[in-house]
Image 1 (cartoon, rainbow over the protein chains, first blue to last red):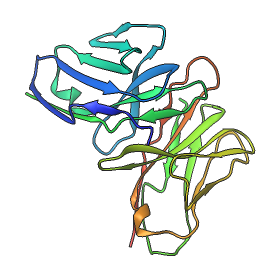
Image 2: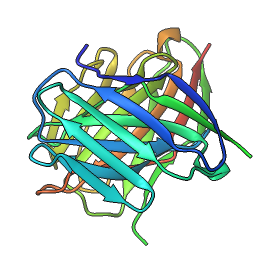
Image 3: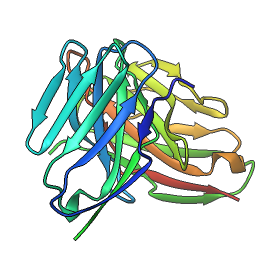
Amino acid sequence: SQQGEEDPQALSIQEGENATMNCSYKTSINNLQWYRQNSGRGLVHLILIRSNEREKHSGRLRVTLDTSKKSSSLLITASRAADTASYFCASGGSNYKLTFGKGTLLTVNP
Amino acid sequence: DAEITQSPRHKITETGRQVTLACHQTWNHNNMFWYRQDLGHGLRLIHYSYGVQDTNKGEVSDGYSVSRSNTEDLPLTLESAASSQTSVYFCASSESGQVDEQFFGPGTRLTVL
């Protein structure tokens, strides 16, 4: 399998705390994307970072990419109960295909 | 607003039956993808298409087929459903170009008895 891995598999925090999820991938990439999935719903794109970028911000999201280690991290600051969801990283090549990791289940307790 | 829809949302079928899951997008995207999502496996690519009359096998294509006769639709067919194909199926689409963010449908939960 070419799938990457997210770490941790599950994370439980209190509202207001920061949540950090890590992702490793196996092949060279064009970009790395993060998606969110609420229970019983489809995936929603959060943020994309290109292979020549090291860090990117979008609102309360911060993504880093280390291509030498084939790893990425997603930081959600000041988490809210509404952030409770599964988070997936997806590595993208030059052919529009994405390879998804197995996801991190984030629970934010009020 | 543009969207991607899937039907049916839930389907129960019997082993050996042929099943077709529909996917329709109004984004006018060239690229369309089918994934299955299973506990412990994340999302795995079944088939994908880069345009009309183009189809390609993904990581887990055995037992599945697709056809692309127009830009909007990519139906997924299970030729002879097996219990191992019980899963949640997601369709996605993306634009050809620099940005390849994928837009996902709501999913179809398929149970094969």
